[in-house]
Length: 295
View (cartoon, helix red, strand yellow):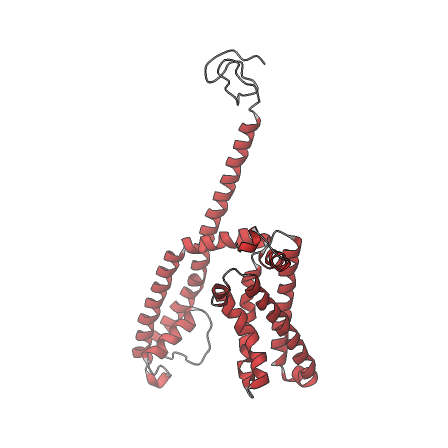
């Protein structure tokens, strides 16, 4: 926590303290309003960026879109400056993941002032979408996102083994397809044949490569059927871990309820002999020394 938080010495420190609570806090109305406003600004700016790439819209509303983009850029620049201003260690924020994303998302518009043709870098502005993960600090999302994170971390080994197995299958069958079909049917190399295998396994099916031999078509049928099963496996793995986390949470809540019930069954009667507290409501004798309680 910044030093000015504990001991504000001036009006500037008080201002930094208030801004810190608004920008980084999620338990206050102002903090929630700031995050929601930022969420709306990010979504609108991304919509503006996408609209610029539609020829008809850009031709008709080019000036309006540029004005909107400058408004959003100024808003995000002010936010970026405020985050640096209220941080105890500004350089830690500047070189952090979100700090770099924030900087890159405002850079293209300023470069367009000095460098002709810098519109090529305008695609960097779409990085603002990554900032939505910061908005998920809101209380409504914290618990759910942490539960999903735990489930993904718990299932990462299984998913890696699964992906490794799929890769081996793709390489093996891709190699077979290369030798079965050959360059005359479009399978000009093993990597290209592996590409066909992966496209077929994922049920994408571009149709740029089609097996013509009976054996090649048979292998393709196996890949197509296998693909449907493969798609469901990662979902099942993560789903099991999510269910475990939900079960743990329900179990913990039940334990807390049981503890509360047990606590509520204890009264404030104190044993006159040993001064022991915390007896049950229906207790007649002290559980510590056995002395009769004066209820």
